[in-house]
Length: 136
Ligand code: FES
Image (cartoon, rainbow, N blue to C red; front, side, top):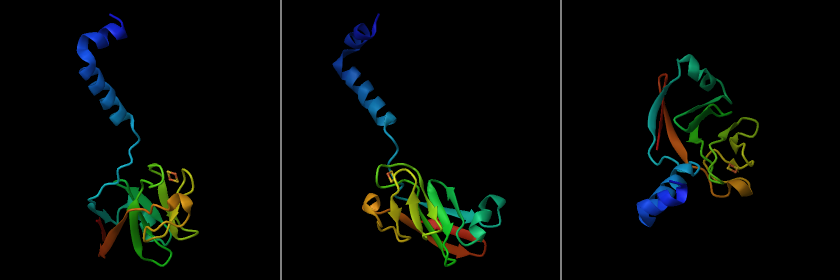
């Protein structure tokens, strides 16, 4: 049985379902989580970058930074331009930056350049002792 015979035997509806399923799963992830709530332990060695101004980590699809002014900020790594998961903190310019096509976003998520014009989802942060809560 070749591919055509197989598709004929299962019918058009099933073929559509298989195709739609593949298209859905093959699509680049571009869905920013709407609900985020987790805590980062600043004493953990894996989070040491957050102890210095300009440092950042990525956890749970969220980039978390200590900004140059010493405050904490968080944003999704998923860029609003074309859905690439490449947003990081740019300490030179104190903004979010996507390495895919150069989109830039202010710390509050507003777009800075044309590729960043759709803005970026940002999250709240609260520091209690050495625990940094990141939440929407
Ligand atoms: S996907 Fe981020 S700049 Fe294009």
